[in-house]
Image (tube, rainbow, N blue to C red; front, side, top):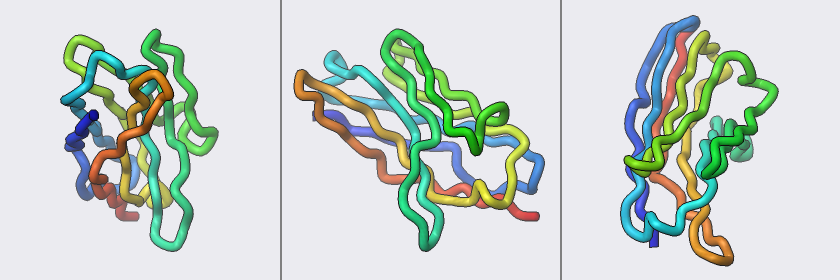
Length: 117
């Protein structure tokens, strides 16, 4: 199994920046894709960004040009750099990784990001 620990959330004013981190432990040798989702109150969880082991990325249109996903395979960590934050970015952000042959998916505990106007 894979365990994920997220950090970096918080309260920021509109236009500000935050960097989220998610460190994986456990069966890390089998990790393939990594990504970030978010869930705002009363809304469904949605994909924010996704990155393959080789570094190919997919970023949601709503954050394209403002958010950047990256990973450090040596540290088994995925990052989300969030710039030019908007109040509508307010949500709980969840890290996820795909691992194993099937593959399976593991989720972090979530970290709150609040953007004030």
